[in-house]
Image (tube, rainbow, N blue to C red; front, side, top):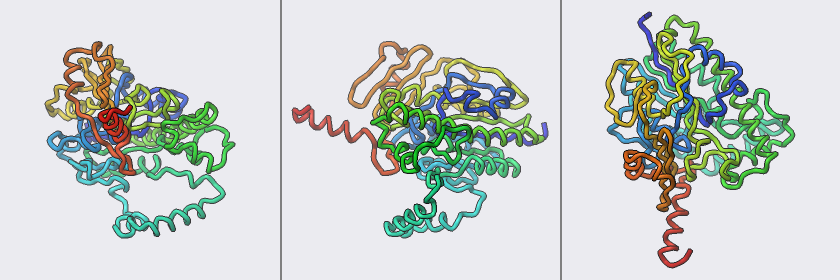
Length: 416
């Protein structure tokens, strides 16, 4: 033991379980197989980031508009040492409580970096809310990127920059570092693709394929295959940077004592069940809530082991608490290696799913239930008492809920 044993949480947006393969992880797979335990039956707590992430950071299903209760601890609050978080996602904000327990936190800018001129301007309210300035900015950006695919960019920090942040914070001796990677998230783009498809479409066509307009109107087979190939190629970019980070961390004198968690927050749909991407208002299908989950334990404990029992993202917090020697009270979550039965709650705005070892049940807002006779009595009680969230999109819409309420009002008036 060298006296420093950091815990690092690396969360990855939009990474479905079946993409944890040598095809999508050609560079980091060997490192992950050697040093990490793998949990092959891991379930997320929601269809999209604001629905899923309370389970990761606070071991609690989402409530209200993407929040978790004020009286539950976050992972960062377990630590006495310096804690740093970089959510890199517009849904994981201070307003939703994601800064709790962090000594240094920022949702859209690395906390240890000076803001750019654009970021400083965006922090000024009258500039941020000016339609004229927004329109001028879009025109300038369109002009500047004309003629190449650089206009197809992620509105986030790249894997290379996120990994650099992790290196800086562990080099600074932080006790807990959380960093969120966005690279697999749409738009799926050629500019970061590694071994991607032949690009036989224009920038505008690729932008259109990535439109959320297709969430309920899936693309045709050729376009879907093209977009899915770009998704895989964007994952390979993340894989390359993850491999570089892990190789660097392996050289540190404290690596053997460190704990590193790698987890996808939710998955993605490519036409399955009649949907694309990760709508907030559809049932929590397997493709949306099954994700990779791997843990490097201190002193190579469980290294190279695959655990196949049902686990959930809520189990990450008690796992870290157990490593720290801290007791946390939770009747619904366990350290990941504990094979105790789970009753996993996964939510969308319109559906709540309860997953057990051998059964799945769904309760929907419009009083349509499915599979409730197959789950345990405890599972039924958990499902019946779970509350529906009202998570807004970035446009301020609670997707799906308004449609249900409108339908119920029409039915009450005798219309169908």
